[in-house]
Length: 314
Length: 320
Image 1 (cartoon, rainbow over the protein chains, first blue to last red):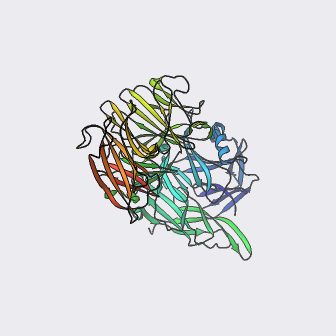
Image 2: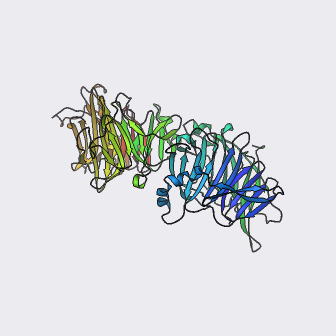
Image 3: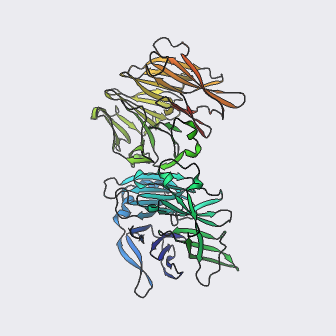
C-alpha cells in the first residue's frame, strides 16, 4: 500500500504526495503523476488562503531544499525547487526539537509534518514530530507554534495519530484532529483539545476529518474495522464548544453523505466494505480522496480515487 | 489522579484532563457531561490565593526531560479549558514563581528578589527527596506565604519552602497532593493534611504559620473506616462550630460490597484533640465500588462537594 505523505486541495484538484511521487487527481477522475526518489524529512501542508475558498499546496523538504509540485503549461506535473525549507517550518527543529527527537526516536530520523495557516493571532503552525509514516496511529508530538515570538511554543501534546496524511485540520482558529481513535477539537489558542463523543458504532474509527467552522460543523469519515464500510457524517460542533458535552450526541448529527465514487478507468473496483481508506476530505466538504487497495484476480491493486459527497438527502 | 477545583468545576488530571461542571442540581452532573481534554503534560501547581473565593488557581510545569522545554502554563476556563503559556506566577507581594532552566526547575522569588541558592529553588529532580510530583503555593494576607513541593522517591516527601529559611523536608509516606487543603480564617492560614503518616491513617489540622497541630483524627487501620479526605473549616463558616475546625470524610466498606461516606466535623483547639465530633452526618450510602488503599478524594474549597475516585470511576457528592 502506497505510503501517503499528505494531500493538498486546490479547487477541483487534489495533490497526493506519496513516498513514490506526487499524483494530481482531478475531481473528474483525471490523474497526472511525477516520480520522486527519497522520503522528505519535512512535509508542509501550506494553506495559502482561507477565503473565499481555501487554496492549499504541498512543500516537500529534503534536507535544506524544498520542492513544490506544479502543473506546467502543457499540463504535465513538475516538481520545482521552492527555495529553502521555510525557516518557520524548521523552527521547531532548530529550537528544541532535538530533545523531543531523543524522546521519540533515539537513533532514528525524525519526520516533521507541518500544517501552516495564513498568519493569524495565535498559533499558525501545527507540527507533528514522529519517527515513521504509518496508517495506524503512531506516537508523535503535536506542537502548536506561534511565529514571531521568542518562545513560539504554545502547546506540546503527546499524541497517537495517523502519521500518513495526518487527520488534522485547522479553520478559523479551530483545530480538529483524530487522536487515539477519537475526534478532538478546540480553539488553537487554548492549547487544549476536547474529545467529541460523536455517535459512532463500536467498530467504527474516524479516519478523515474536515472543518467548516462558518457552519460550525465538522465532517468525518468513519471506517468500520469489521468490514462494514464507510460512513461520512456532518456534525454540529456548537454544543461541544459551548463547554458542556451534549447529553445525546445523536442530536448533533446533521446528516450523512451519499458517497458517489469516481473510479479511474481500467482499475478493478474495490470492495467498499473493506478495501477503501478515506484519506482527506476537501475543504468544500463535497468530495474526498480515498485509497483503494486489495487483491483481485491474483494481482494487487493500489490507487487513489475521488469520492463525491452528496448531502442533498440528509 | 490529582483532583482540582477551579471556579465552578471539578478537574481530574491523569494522562488527560477530565472536567465536570459543578452544579447544585446533582442530577445534571453525570458521566455524559464530563469533558475530556488533551493538553500539554506537566506537573500540576495549585495556587491558593488570599481573598479569592477559595477556588484553585491551576498551573502546569511542563516536564520534558532535561528541563530544556520547561515552561509554565496557566489553566483557565471560559467555555472550554485553555492551557496557555505564561512566564511567571505572580503573588500580591510581588513574589513570583518562575522557570529556572539553569537550575532545572522552579525558582521562588520571595518579594520578587533572588535569594541564596537552595532557599528558593524547586528542582524537577532532587536526589535526596525524589522527583517533583506536584506543587501547592499558598498566598497569605502578606503575600506568598509558603510553597509545598510534593516529591516521590522511595516514599513521598513534602518539602516546605518559607521566606528566608532553608526548605524543610517532611517525610510523609502517603500524603499525596490531594491530601493537603488550605483555608483562610481571619488573618491565619489553616492547613489540613490527610494520608498515612506517623504509622497510621490520619487527618490533622494546622495553622500554617505556627506549625502547631490544632486537631488530629486517626482511625484504626484494621477497622472498617478509612479517612479519605479532610478539610479545614474557618471559624464561623459552619453552623454549630465556634472556632476553627477540621472536616473529615470517612469511607466505610459494607459487607454488601458497597461504600458509605460520612462527614465528621471536629473543633480544632490546642490540647483538646480527644474530643468527639461536633457534627456527624452520612453523605451517601450504597455506593458501588471498592476503596483503593489510598483513594483519591478532595472536598471542594467552598466545602460544597466531595469528589472521590474509586477504582476507575469518579463520584461527586454534595456535602450540603
